[in-house]
Picture 1: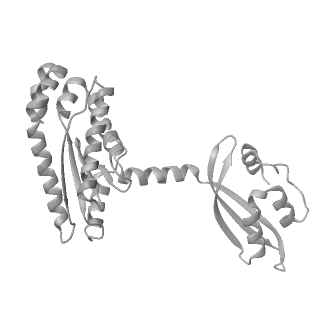
Picture 2: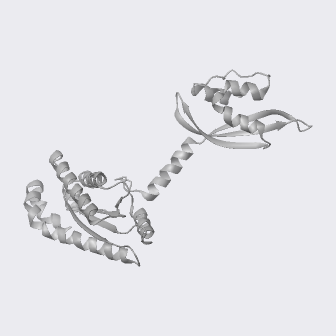
Length: 276
């Protein structure tokens, strides 16, 4: 055992850091390192010269580490077993980078919802028709540009993240909620009945009202539209367009309803909110 291995095992709080024995290796190592017993015994009983395994090891000082453990069989000149070299490689940081890259490739960094790329992939998957009926809900945050211009981008980001939280709390387990644009969100609901779609929309309304009661200093307003149908033969595009059309209808219908509210909140900028 070299000093690097000794310090590594010491930081893990593992016994055996004083192992320099010349006793029979395959027996003594299993006794000293019981967390390697199964893998090491399998290696010794096999015929491979070299074997690599991945193992998560919980360390006292460093938390859980992702290790690659390499067993290499040492043979003498007569090709008889002489011992085993074990090499530990800590891949935790590389794994974290890989997981991060994988996450950001399909998620929006601000909201942690899925991004447009993943949403489009999900739409393609649903075109097979195996998850019919399919519903799509479109959601557009009202007045984001004016909020950014008047209260700053921090306030605008808060509207975006608040909207994401409302949608996340409202959807079913297998639904896909995504941020598909700057102020645009979309939800695809596979195997969705009309009643299920109605329930999700009602939950969105409930969560929106609840959020605004608890955060009256910066209430959220968004326009919403939904459509339902079978996703066969390219009809998913039609469902998407119908949801988009319903969303714009909703935006127009509540223009006057919310104008006084936004006027009182944002003073002179309220009239501009629904022009964005």
